[in-house]
Each structure stands twice: as structure tokens, then as C-alpha cells.
Length: 199
Image (cartoon, rainbow, N blue to C red; front, top):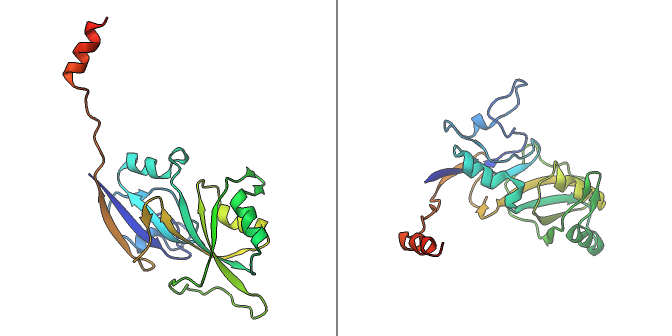
């Protein structure tokens, strides 16, 4: 059995437990010894962060080879046209190369907690919400992708990592789940005997 902690990381909190510059850290939100984040979430992003004390589990969650999809709710500047959404679905070319295709859909004002401080509101500039699901995790990738199609990200909330979802967690709150990892089973003795008899 392994314990996995699901935390709703607030805006402007580091994905680490210590900081020499006085910024908010995970120590202010979760007081569980000997755990660490399985992956990270930017200081200016919010949402789901997974923590565990099981190194093998952390590796399975965070290593790119395992391709855990990550889903984000993104408030962007402006009203994206269908062509912009299609570009995100097909993949865009950033400075570090083309992205993989993303799943993208429009959201109608999702029910999210207020952010402190709030996103700056400008009467002349509308905003829209998108749901993006990525199968890779480059540095600040969502922000770079939306900027590339002409719609800078104003607010970014990660709502899912693989099968784990943020639902029900307020900012700064967490819950624990217990995972039962399957054990590898040894081959039956009879099969070994059959293999030896054919040599």
C-alpha cells in the first residue's frame, strides 16, 4: 500500500516545502512528514498537486514515459476563434519544437474558487475559459501554447492528473488516498518443469 496526497495548491505558492525568499510554500498547506511532490506546478498556477513518500509511485506519476495526461482549466484573454482551438488540437510549434496534439474545448464559466489577488478585469477585453488536456509536460507549456495562438493565459488551474481529480478540494486543502499496487506473481512451478523438459 502507498499513500497519495491530493492537494489544491493555491495561487502564488511554491511546489516545495522550503524557501529562502519568504514566499509561500507547501508547508503552509499540508503538515505530513516525509512526503514530496510528484511533479510540480508553477508558482503562478493553481490546482492539483500530488505528493507521496513512495519514490516508485512518484516516478510512475511524474516521468514522461508514463504519459499521465494532465487537464487544465485556462482563462484566456479574448474570445478564441475555431481556428485557434484547432491549432491547439493539432499542436503548435514553440521555441523548443512542436507540441503534441492537445484535447481542447470551450467552458462556460466554470465554478471555481475566487483567486487572491483576482485576475485583473478590463471592460474592453473579454475573456474565455478553455479546458486543455496535454500528454506532455514542458515548462510553462499551457501559457506558451495559448500565447502562440494569440490568447495569453490569465488564470491556470490544473484539475486532473491521470485518474486523480481536483473536484471537492478548496484552495489549500488536501485529502489522502491509499493505493494498492499489484504484486508480480511468480510463474507456476509446473510451467518451469515443462520448459526444462523441452531442453
